[in-house]
Image (tube, rainbow, N blue to C red):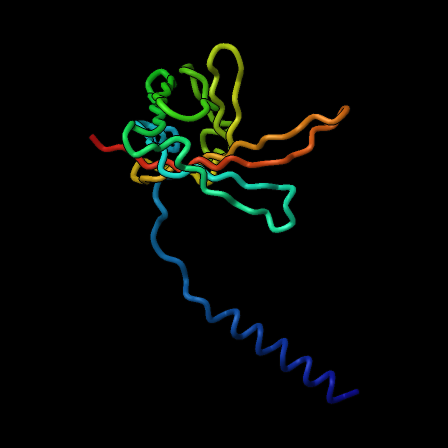
Length: 167
């Protein structure tokens, strides 16, 4: 019993000593990046994935060919930060984004959702990641479900991966 107490005391002492050996942080992190400015510009669809939530292994299918036929320009979204407007350029595939309208985040400092208001409805997309002004990828996720009585069952996630267009 006495040796168990001594061993425990020694382990706690060692842990305390090792915890004190951390280097001190120096410098400043700087100002946080402006996520609103990160959205500015034109984004072209690079990949469209459908994730089946009813499948036990959550199967993902790459359906990019629906939007990119190799001839026409794939789906493009353009975001303006001055008036928070957006435009959609679509030749092939289904339009899940409306024609044009205004956009907003759920929180401009730490966004997790993007809202697109086309004047008829407000569309909600989850952000796969926050976009900073120098990032070249935007990932949006659209959760779709089926209504069954009073409850909606989540059935599929559409994942839209975009690359920033530099012209």
